Length: 342
Image (cartoon, rainbow, N blue to C red):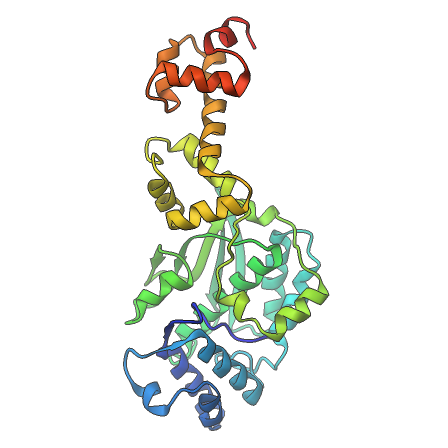
């Protein structure tokens, strides 16, 4: 499996620190990295330059060359090699799972067959799923950051591909000090990144775990030939987005008053929010109307509040606009709806 070139291919934003970690892998095996660097069009001078970055395409070329040349998909991180094809085996072992939750558990279990230097585990509590990495033995400091980051990126990229949906992360955590290139982490994971945490990991909405896998062996073979889109490019569609928008409009209506405010709560841009909803065949206004309709019906059935108060409570400026909208939704005026016990 091709190692992830972490960020957008057109921009040189992948930290050179990850390139240096690959060079360290060559040094561990007493091998020469010059051919791999040449294949990625990275000069030794650039490798040594503090703060330098490379493009995702460069990093992909470097990683693939290095993995095959060293015959180690872990690139020297662990106490034993992970021969070429190891991560492809993990992908196949999870591919027949009935849903994402089972797929991740299989990935974690089978990862132990590759190495016991680290252990991956999935925990679910309070509607949040958390993937954690436990370090069973000290990782070499030259590889530790790159190892933990890449392990999480491998799994996140694979499961997004497997269910054909972006999995929006709530947060990510790492057990080391914030590196000089900390600005790359929100691009790799999410805006909420914590350093100096007890363990590495990330969390996401538990409901993703129930989604069925959408891929087959043929699709897997195609993906494994070039994993850059899997691990770099964000999925354009989040299959839970519409549902998450509805819930925020219900539970945090006072905060989710505009598209920008709602997008901020979801950790996406307003442009992305509108685009993804459009790809789902809906819109923010449609979802707002659906939620207002549900809330209005509930208020009219359960309470005796005046129509004007109901209108304000569900987000309308006045009773007249509310009554007009309610008539369009149900074919009845609010007062008639209440009186007739509909």
